[in-house]
Image (cartoon, rainbow, N blue to C red):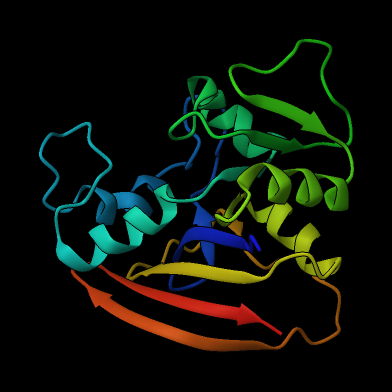
Length: 194
């Protein structure tokens, strides 16, 4: 059965964007540094497919997912990914207030986290579901709907921006580290959520 897996690049001090993130500047000021590992050894400056062996393995796992759940903020800041995050897989955009216009490509708006997970897992069939966005990750964690996290820790301190784990309730969420892969400019940590 499909698992929901958060894939997120994060600074050592817990930020997933720099300050002033917004449309056209989805990662905020200096936040692009968090994705430098994607271009490590890439064949072209516009490629997001790393050539470095370990990061390429992790990237291929991400691109092997069968659906995406994201928050509306992330979706809009990313320009709706032009309607296709990867390989035409369905994109489920979690939002409290769907806009009147339909999203691009294979995306659809969903107002309930459990419904988004149910639809995404059904669409992904036997492949995992990629989760994007800090608020979406927090929502799924609060509702016990997130199965795993693949955190790409980048050795930089951003000092400001949007933190991945802000706004969580005071209760403990237990994690089990199941993999740690070192690559140039990034450490890929995989946690199962207990």
